[in-house]
Length: 252
Image 1: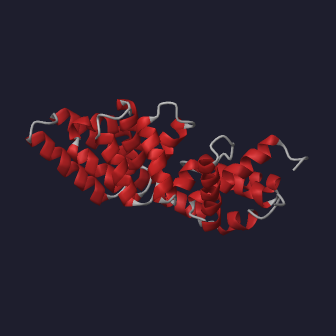
Image 2: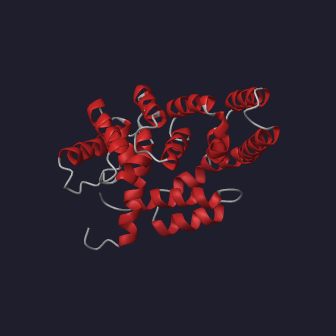
Image 3: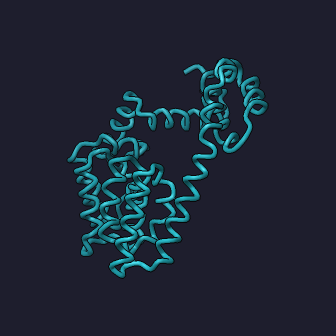
């Protein structure tokens, strides 16, 4: 759109990406198609959203990029692929990533191996399960995963499983009590934060007045959001709704 500002163009792209993250089939297929074109013509700039595309990439494409990642230091868009290949929803593929991480003969750096596991922890439930099995086998590296575990551990079941793992590691002399306590304290703090603010966030989204205003002009919605959003994370949530409201006012 010639008359459209760069800010609006950027917002539209971000909102459409949020739609992909919400598992919209059309959106995901579109990004997968772009990855296929990128795969077939790597010299062209098809600019796929790699994470969305890898969610449903077939084994041929997945294996190609994983093999390139662990063997080709000059791989085009290497950093993007390293940060997104974990987005696959296929547990078998995710398991192959872990096998590659544990293979010390490939070119993955120690930092890349840690980052791949950390990204898997917050990618999906399937990826979390696969990554957590890796952590069980490498619990001595728990300090490298603490920050992401704070985000990934969001249920009592997961928390209990982690505490059990840490206690076993202490008994076996793999971890110190201090290391375990630091990890447990960090996750407990995050869980308490979630419990404290969850109801406020849910109530805000259930506000009928806000939902009705979302279909009005951008200026009106922006004003409504600013005056009705209170409490923790209000500004973050209002930003996403503002993006959606802007998209509603634009002709596709």
